[in-house]
Every structure is written in C-alpha cells, then in structure tokens.
Length: 139
Image (cartoon, rainbow, N blue to C red; front, side, top):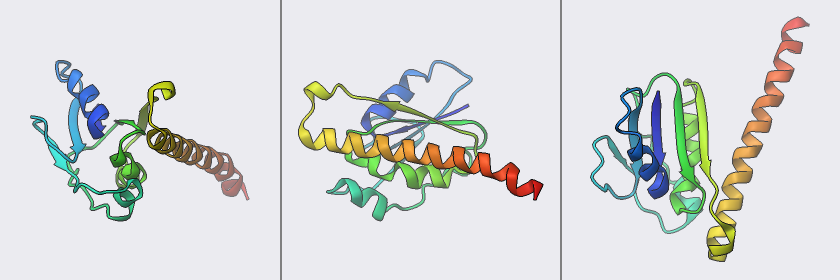
C-alpha cells in the first residue's frame, strides 16, 4: 500500500510507517526534512494558491491502493483535491488529521474547516454517483 504524506503533519505520520515493509511512502511538502522519496511543491503564500498553481507531481510509480495523510491546517492542504484527482485511478483512502480547535489560530481553524468540508463534499458526490450509476446502466 502506498502512503502519501501531504504537508508537515502528513509527512511526519508517513515517516512513522517506514519500518513496515508493506507500506511505500511518498512525501509531498514544500521542504524536504530528510525524506527519501520527496516530491517538492513550490511554496505559496496563500492556501488557495496551492490549488490554483498546482503542478502535477511525478507519481507514476504510485500504483495500487493509496492513502493520503494530511491535516487541513497547513497551507499546502489547499492542493489536496488536485493531488487526489491525479491519483483517481488508484483505490484511494484519506486519513484526515483533525487538529484541536481550542489551540488553533483563527486562520488555521478556517483552513481546517474548508478542507474537511471539501473532502466531505467530494465523498458525498462520489457516493451519489455510485447510487446513480446502476440506475443508468439498467435503462
């Protein structure tokens, strides 16, 4: 199984799984903190710029079941939908790290809320498509 750590928190969690040979790690962040299979993303000033200015990451070796690990607090989480779109042919899981809202700055709270709601909406749309697909095939 592939584990893609997105952002600082996601990469740290993915790193913890390096001792388990059933996992293949990929690290996506703005700064390499000593990761072997690191994929840099150009640092952006605003959360939304990570999606707007996203450049495809060379993940051609990332095939099969894939789990993307992230927290919504970091600016880089703004590119999560673009990353998931790039991986659409893989069976996908998302491990979303929900931060403690009581200790967050307001700007972090807003980003966290946006990312978690966007991911929930994507899941709902996917489930709706699954429900409609069999009906279309029958008619």
